Length: 456
Ligand code: UD1
Ligand code: MG
Image 1 (spheres, protein in one colour):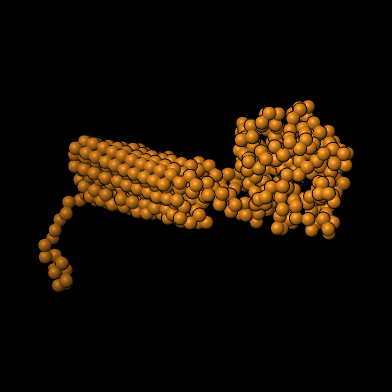
Image 2 (cartoon, helix red, strand yellow):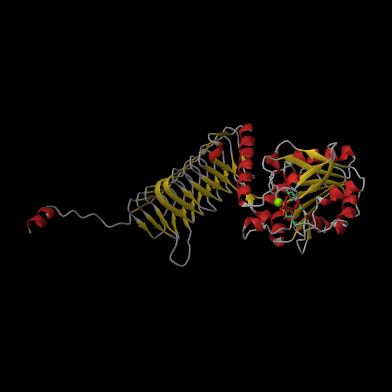
């Protein structure tokens, strides 16, 4: 939008969260609140986006990176004081400025667009985004005149008994004529219950000066939740979870029990994939088409191809090919790469290892720091002994090798192409291709020995 600017307020400590983590960095569906706000603002194509930082400035800047410019509010004297810090960057510009709080992660970009459109059409100097709340406790209340005209906002702590009855609340999102905003901020005082400079006072001041001010009422209160404590944080999580589940279902993903499925805001899931209950898709996970995930699986920052299944398993920071089956009860640890048509079965742990197409480890094994070719079979109970107590070593298992049950591969070691390892072997030397390695004591049958023992 032409000549639109945005300011995000993110300098507060968030005392009511009772947390070491700065409020706006608390995640909602795996993504920091302020990142939700910025990503939605990004869709507005504002000319400049300025985030006001203070508490946790470094972490906030690190989280948002180049998506925003930053201005420091050294002392947190209130939301009007916070916006005032942007004067040196935006103060002289002609245009419309939208201000959004960093603790309102649910406001959609469509709602912000509607607010800006309403503001520009009405010709108001300031437009406040409001909503009707069943329980308005804690929010600023909108005071309207007899003709319904917006007069001002009053904070909960400053409100009279009658004003506390008002259910129309300030969502903390506003649109201003940019120049009027910065001129009026200078007139805001901190003469109130909290001794703070309140941004919504700009509305009342402009109105009293005879300027046109307006309100845009949004119908969905849940969208405007301001997260000030952990109770509202969990409500916001619930709203976002439902919203994300609905988006994925509309895109062709089956979610058997949305209330028991957790999908991060940044996850991608292909059509005809089925999510069973108890599934958590976290971080930037990308899942292809036609997969079945769950029940009871956790997948974090991983990529999964098409037609694969993950049953009751944990997959962390790894990539899984297509037509691959993981679980039940498998643990795929970071930096693992499983190819296509791979099978990882129950009680198998894979760590920082690559398994080529068609390779299998169906039961009770540990594969760590290994480079495994295609169509390799690990028998039940294979252990890759990658750690000597000081260092991790690499094991190479070439294509078509067959590792017998209950074998140890002492790293570093290479099993050549097509080689066989006899069950129960402890392999300490490289095995040439096409060879059978037997590394176990020969069996000795002492005939009649048991009866002799029993006689004594
Ligand atoms: C604010 C509004 C209230 C509204 C509610 C909506 C004011 C005075 N009140 O109250 O009318 O109903 O939001 O959620 O604005 N911040 C700074 N610097 C400061 C103070 C705050 O950057 O000096 C930031 C915070 O990090 C936060 C945002 O501004 O992201 C809002 O501050 P918060 O303390 O949460 O205000 P509320 O009490 O929720
Ligand atoms: Mg708040």
